Length: 365
Image (cartoon, helix red, strand yellow):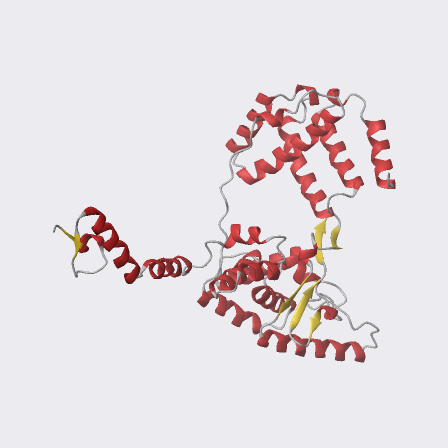
């Protein structure tokens, strides 16, 4: 057993005294702290857990673990909906409580997990926003007029489909003058600030080809960065591409990028989030006829099914192309004529010269 496992085991043994008698407010705090110490969840996830835990405590924090029954969970969910919380928020709180109570069952503190016998409010599948061609072109034009980190961040996201944290973590060593950017890391947000994190899976590490204009713009930016670095006697030539400091030694905080982009949209009449730039890229790739496996690779999706689930409806021309394919597949006059002749012969009918259509082709002999 590794050291982390030993620590977790000792925590459980020393703190599990009568989990069933503990108030939910104390137990949820213990559970989240235990998950944080285990290191099995991202620091950004820990921040989300703490926010969700406060919702649990607000509604059922004064109950003991053993007092939380199926009706109590169902009533809690109904109360959150009544108070105006979105189904997605309710589901996050429900899942955290379910995990915590599952752990309590495993420790023998309670016999069953009440969350196994009820469900959170149903979530409607959220529709992503993809800019149309005119809006995409207008945004790209405005971004290219802005030499600030925000302008470059928008251009990179719009032309590569990278996530916000991936754009912020790009360094000059990830840029190739041959026209590619390689995603090797991302920035995450946690309590106390942002941090560098590895991609969630091997598919997250990927090299993306650049549009020629973007490649040239980044080449000029890198040249300016290296010149400034030399004139200031800097030792590092590997700053952040969309760096926040004068020398590019500090990354652009993802939260600040989100706020700056929201202001950019308000100023210029766009209605989208930074994440929608990724959706826009993927939609145009699918619409341009790029095969789904390649699109999945560019986006860093772990499997093609994920890409299909999100972007199957992304191409407005797809169904029209499919209709054309169906028409061509069944538009075989010679085959239909032969089939109709055989059918007519069996039925004692004759086929006239009206063509292969069944309705026009049969007449009584």
